[in-house]
Image 1 (cartoon, rainbow, N blue to C red):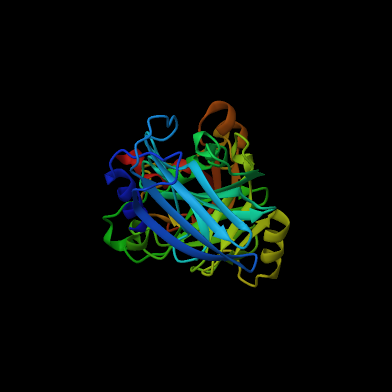
Image 2: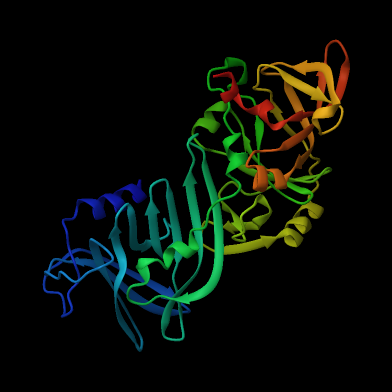
Length: 359
């Protein structure tokens, strides 16, 4: 709700521009106080109604003032509205962390502000992308430390909003909403993989799926680890153009502290875990073929039906097909208790969990 209100504030303000001289007609003044590096700073953002026809970046530009001990600066053409893009100064939800809040179409981002060497700088962005299925994907990116100067809003922020190449896995999270027998059944949805570590969203019910309430779970072939539900988790991307660019997780706790976990750190968490792996989900596709191996040449004459519940033992993601051939190629090794055949261990394709194929 706060994001919407902030953007509405920008949209509803008439055409404004900053003044070369001190502004005499300030509107939408917002005041914040933050401690950065143990030093207090005051941030003031506003729009200036003084006429100025020279602005070439924002059609609704704002001004950001920052005041602290031996630090008094005014920044122009850093925040404002430009086309469908909006950049405002704010704080990161309830974390009391100063950020540039960036929004364009279905993408929003929090870009924390750093004060160093008498400059304000940015390095990382924490991005929320709403996909066409309604699923929200959270990812992060950290580039080189950059100084923010007048005019930075022209293109500088876009460097910290790279394309998201894990979206094919998120598109597969599309579970039925009208099956009474599954209303309160826990299930998992695959969202990514780093070598032998897989990541899932765990929903306790269809109701939680609809309300985007989940727990992030990571697992290898033997164990699983459940992250705290109160933490915000962002998948860190390296900026490359393939699913292989997923390099770890940024964990943001309730106080706004951010810690990056690379593969080594994530493996250490898994090694300490005492929870046996139990990744599970239910079949969505009308006719799910079973395979002896994760390839099309090993099909059997057995298949699963919608709502059959399976245990997922392993995942294989052919990343090259996503990058080169532009399609999802994920295989799951599953265990299923059949009334006719007993316990079956076979492979199925990723589309098995995609109810859109039945529409």
